[in-house]
Amino acid sequence: MSTEPCKNCKSFWALKKREKNGTMKDLNRGHCLKRSIFPANKPGGPVYPPEAIIQETKHNVIKAHIVKDTDVVSSCSDFVRKS
Image (cartoon, rainbow, N blue to C red; front, side, top):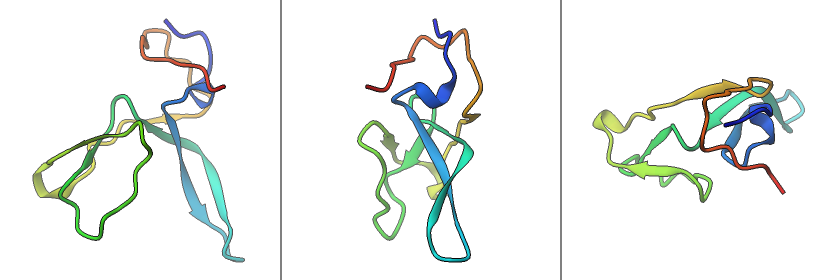
């Protein structure tokens, strides 16, 4: 059971936004890698984090589970604190 915000979990992968100057900025929400499913059959060979669940999906679509970085999901049994 978790008592900490999602941003402290190893499974939190922040969504990013490209700034006007070309740099990337983390947004305040992201994928829960334990609950999101990324398509193995997506063209272009996207790069996912090592913890990502990769499977064949219908129409090459991500089955995303998005959480806010400040969310505390007390029922989450997959929480692992970042080191």
